[in-house]
View 1: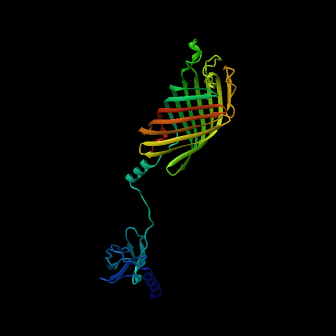
View 2: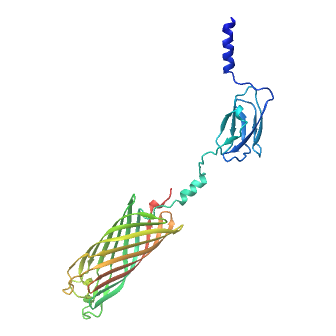
View 3: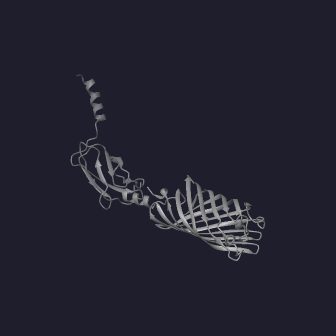
Length: 343
């Protein structure tokens, strides 16, 4: 091969060949963070080389270069981004920047987080209850009061996203005894009215810190069957069959005050309901300007994650011209809350 062809090939080989380092050549350097503080225990090695070193407490390192190694120096340390620099530039400190923080929770932390994540308290539920009621009626100069100890009720709630439907229904039948009226006729002095009442609420659930509330619009319906056959047994509207329909506004809410204890409440206000009377004495002419309110307060204790024991108090208040109606109701119930199981 002629000289003019061999020389260009030799120059090309020199140009592409990696730089060679003399045997036993050493390299000293310094590693620091972005603030200029020395970094210890940084792993430093030569690209494709057989040797490596770690920086000391002052960030200094000494590395024996491999003649067959590459021309890049690599520095790595946990919590920092790795750096590659040419060997020739190690006269300047090597700076490592911190890696972006990535929080990876452990399995224990994840389980604790799931266990502590609060479930929606105003949610799907179904409850049955027993009620004890002390009821009073006053109409002009007449009044009647007594206990109703056979009232049964149920509560049902359904939630779709934040919309909440709630139904409260109850039924009772009680003997009202007024011995002073027509004592010669025992049947005239005993009245057994049957009352069925239901309240349907549509609310929108909101969270305010640890409290969940739901303002709502409500419809109330009450049917009373007096069974008096038109006799003036009590001299109050309780002597007449009646139907009451009302629209109201209210607010219900709940808060978990202990791991297994929930406090809840409900206040509804009703104005100008429609009241009709049938089969009553002529003295029952109507209720002018009737308005009312229902206030409920209670505590629920979780027997198991889905079953709760509820103890509740409710006060019913109705007023009209020459008319007053009050009830204090104590309720004992068992409720089922499938949505409160935290997965």
